Amino acid sequence: MPKAGGSLGSAVRTVAGWTLISRVLGLARDLLIARAFLDTPIASAFAAAFALPNLFRRLFGEGALAAAFVPAYAEAHEDDRSSEPPNESRNDADRLVSLTAALVGGVTALLTVVGELILLALLVLLPESGERGFSFALMMLLLPYMPLVCVTAVLGGALHVHGRFAPTAAAPVVLNIAMIVAGASHFLRPDADVRTTAVLVAIAALVAGVVQVAWSVYALRGHVCWTRGVREVYGRARAMLARFVPAAIGLGAVQINSFLDTLIAMWPVWVGPTMLGRDYPLDERANGVLFFTQRLYQFPLGVFGIAVATAVFPLLARTARDAGAFRETLARGVRLSLFIGLPASAGLALVAPDLVRGLFGGGGAEVSFSAEGLLSSERVLVAYAAGVWAYALNHVLARAFYALSDTATPTKVTLAMVVLNLGLNLTLIWPLGVAGLAWSTAACACVQALILSLLLRRRLGRGAGSGVARGIAVTLALTGVMAGAVWAVASFIGPRDGWGEWVIGTIAIAITGLAVFGVGAVATRRPEVRWLLARRAGSAYDRAEQE
Image 1 (cartoon, rainbow, N blue to C red):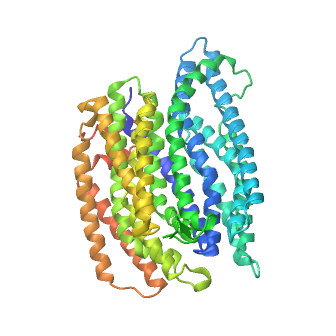
Image 2 (cartoon, one colour; image 1 turned 90 degrees about the horizontal axis):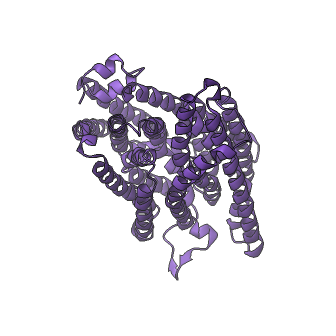
């Protein structure tokens, strides 16, 4: 079995590179929409509507089903490649992906119909109250995006098994461009109405969803021969379903918890300004502020953190039968995740005021968050930043269990975190406002990372952590040096007045942090750098110093 470092590094670079392009466009999209909607109830309604299909995408597309499908598809593909005679290769893999895509499309389409009927009933039965009716109508418009994005995610899992990471990572570019065009129309139309712009952006997302499915099917040409004859893989499908159900319970609970987060933030819009006779601590703008601020911490997480987990999952699935190779792949995945996540957490927290005021402030009242909205966004971003390293690490650790065909363990941990998160949410919003939701999310992510790490160490033995503790210690030290340099530069720049100064401050602080950490990593000859730069397994980088 070849070493994982080079192939993992190459896959991470591919996913991160394309995801960087997508995330830059996504950030531009979100900033454009934020400038159009501002911190208003319309922004909260749009955030709630857009979150709904994404919740199901994480469950059926990128979550439980992907965790069950990727190992099953990888196993079928490997079995087909070693089958005799050679012209029989890939038949089971073709049948499995055909069956899975059809099932996901059918089930999510049915859920879409049920959701539309429920929302229609709410529109008819509930009296009109402020922005509630528009919020439900926008949710109805965006709900059909759910089956499209879920099918795209399943097809992306098949592409990953074939070592093709670029098409799936590039697919969101289509969505971002479509929404940017629709959002830009707000500033080009005379007397533009915010509600009309929200509808146009939603329609653009639906069109992009159709294009994403077609793009993924096209990318699979030559790798998959679609077929209706799937009876031969019913056994594999049942085994996949057996892994899917426990994960679905856990992730389903997570999605319910996420919906409860949305309900907590949307309570003033959907229910009213009081709860149990007390004034509610959040207002109608809270969900919009939370949504747009989330996009800022999800930028480094999506570009680098998720890239590591996405790249390492197929490698873990392939090496699940080789204990030594599995441990090596997991150890490198953990170290790469923290090598990226720890400095990202520290840097994002330090740059939060500059980033928020540079992106959401300035340009006049017509295109800028209110002073209260900017302050809330700063506090939310600092809270989310504290957990960036844990969000990224949890993706790697959970996929390690999934690759071992163990979906029950991470499910149990997830269920515990759901209960903890809900309790913290309802407790922290009273003293901390909307930032309480973010602090609850970050705290639960850190606790989850600790629990999953301990459980994996117990399962794999002490050899699974070879060199990991020392590597993490050095990464922490480099992060501390970087944080000190960033603080010094921020202090030297001093108080800023005006949008331009906030932008310049953000750029200066970010460059300082990247340069100090990068130079420190190279100077200390961190193997994580070599793993990321290695072009192939067994390269000179892999033969260099091992820890």
